[in-house]
Image (cartoon, rainbow, N blue to C red; front, top):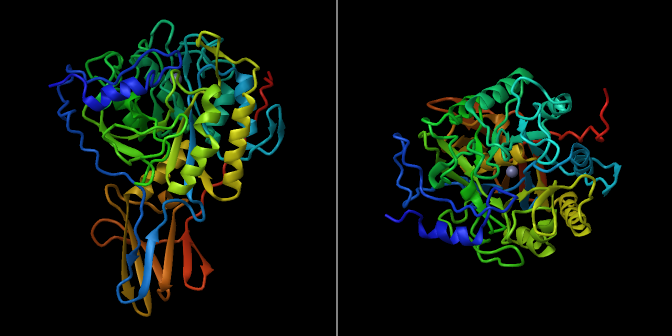
Length: 476
Ligand SMILES: [Zn+2]
């Protein structure tokens, strides 16, 4: 058996430093062998699911069809920013947050009013240069001066992604106790997070491996003192970005995106095809949902210097035309010295092309063409629509539509943002969620909007998103 499958070797050449802005070569390798419960054959991944819905079904006995739309009506495509938090100074983090989410004047220009979120760290072995953290440096017992601000951002939902537990890039000091302290603090704050992203260099043993683990990643090896995957599962984490899930394919989720090559966008040789979410297994046997992030073919991991090329007009046009989705991999706080070494920007503004292209994205969002949502909500939405089963039957003079999850029970709150389109003469329509057995619940929060003589949109409202509340000034 080859140690590294052919597609992973190809990715290794094309996608270097998947999770590390410092630029170390990171080729996804075979699973570590010391975990006894590991059983999957890595040469034959079974990546069924998850692609966007694409087909209408007929309503029996009615001259009508119904379909789950891939994106909230009337959007044609979807986008979320999945930013890794390292190298941000607190003030720059606040400037970017205000610019992205509010309509106020900021040093980057008028705010973009985009739904956005961010990842964060509980620990940082170098808070001054590597980035700030909730706890003081790597101390599990002492909070940093920024902890009250981060607690507020966690409760508001702006911080929705754990970018691993922290930056252990200096001494590699992560232990299971760090995970216990971090998750206990989330619990104390009443915050439940669902999104995990791997971080950093080979010193970050906290990283999760999955089927295509890098050898140093030990967070999902039960025999390791860095093991913590059981704690994440208990805390409710559901979506995982692992090193092997960087992609250079820009538009994912349907069959219209694979051939687009332009600038940083290229074909993807991995076995995951059109999927935007994938099923993977951690090495403790846990099944997880992994998500693919757009990196772009470039020597260094994505940063403000490549942002404009990542979301170039050509790529955004392709996204709209293909109707797919993109989860953008970035390090908005990371700048580079002349030899490419990653450094904290500390007051440097985003380059003008990056500002312009995020403005382009915002214009497409406000024109209701590209849907933008915070990362955790975007992933929850994707899981729901990619897993949604729709059945229709005639009832009286009208029809009854039944929604259910193919893999997991469906709750009505999971339908936030989902749109159905009914075309033709369906009569009056009842909508229900079907659970196990005879369990049927009428949907109460959806709204019907007639948009044509014989076309009706049924939609579940999205929550409203918080504006970033801080300007970076610290009050005592
Ligand atoms: Zn990182």
